[in-house]
Length: 608
Image (cartoon, rainbow, N blue to C red; front, side):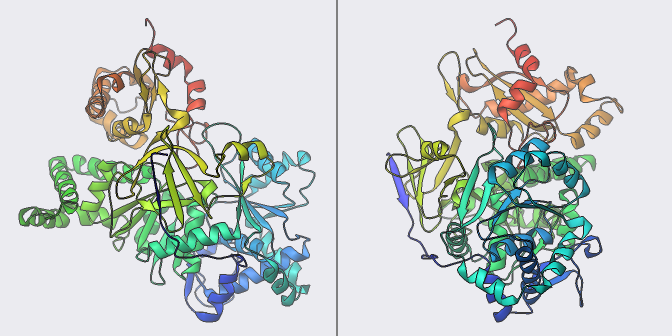
């Protein structure tokens, strides 16, 4: 080991904790506190008997959880049984999750965009006895694979009011039966089996206990009181099947903060303006799109020069915050001017009240981190994995180091192995992969450290910097090791670029596949006299290639000659989750792209 760092836990114990207990505690202590606000409640299946139909108080949430828990008991769901949950982010997702935990069963999340094959694998491997789906399309998808799921006894569809029917079925179950089930749950019991979306291979089920999640959430709340408190609110639009969003759900319930579940990510800006959250959480692509959209809008209004100056001032101001003397009076005045002209409008897109954002899932990059902090929206980049419940490290508002993912959370010990891999020891580390002891054994060292598969470094103050994935490191024909993520991030800085992926493993040089952002494309082609042209028709156009070459040149300035991109190819269409080239959290599935785009990759090296 080259270096390690440990932060003492703020929250310990948890041996007798069940995650649903806090729902009853909240209803007793603050019954009228607003726990959820449901957007467009008329479109939602779970009814409100009185009052504002969009508001769910702590008392109402307890009553709803109790009703569904009684229904699950009546339906024969026993302690330890696995229940699948396939839905977009909505109130019913949280309702089912906590009801399953209340009766001692295990939630098995499934992304609402999963294929039939993925759904069948997850339900079969977990041995799910029941499954909650959201829509008729989900129900049809499941019906098509049901013959291969002999243990699956029941399916409930949210949009067909099946949860209401389930609650009616449970009317004969006494509240005392639910209480006995809830009291019997211990911290060592599995709470959920989360199947990794994975950029490679078949998903593996990560078994997380009530104690794993309780300790991770409790220490995250203790480390980030500015984020998680009863006055806080957020619009949650990331899929709750992702462990990052799930942590925020549990933290919001624990602190009696207000969560606005938003099932449609396309309408999220409208929800942000309506709900005015105190913080948001998102993957880096959301912030990249917000930045590029603001920049393009300024250009459309012939004010691109103003945005460029505002960009430089914002980044300069943020960098100066990290110096002993801080920003000078001149920089403060310029920053104040551009706050009136530019930054306030950018913050208004996030609702106006938002001053903090949590970023996870992939690196944000220093470029955007400094820009948004200077503009008054501090992005707290963090790090974790599904296997670690998931949070391991995060930047705090009072101690940021942009370009890193912060210091370890309380209760987490990190180390850097001799080969650069980040290792972890903590009570938040999972119990193992479901039905896969061989994979579990491979992911731990002989002395009990969890192998993250990420490469990184720790500085003298214990801040962690992630530099790549062990499986994604490319080795060129000349033996040069290259981590693609940082270079790809810089290429994506160009407003025309949607995705970039480096190639070069075993090749004589590094090259790049580049996709074009669909929204930016319509503006670009109109401005260049091609109003109806597709990317496929113009991908060899000299003007378009010149734009992308600018992005490549900018990225190359940050790396050595051996790491620089020598050539690139514009792809006719974008990477998407639908075509299998992106995960639900927008990470590139490199093996899939390499298989789908083999002809384009071959063209990059033709003649060499």
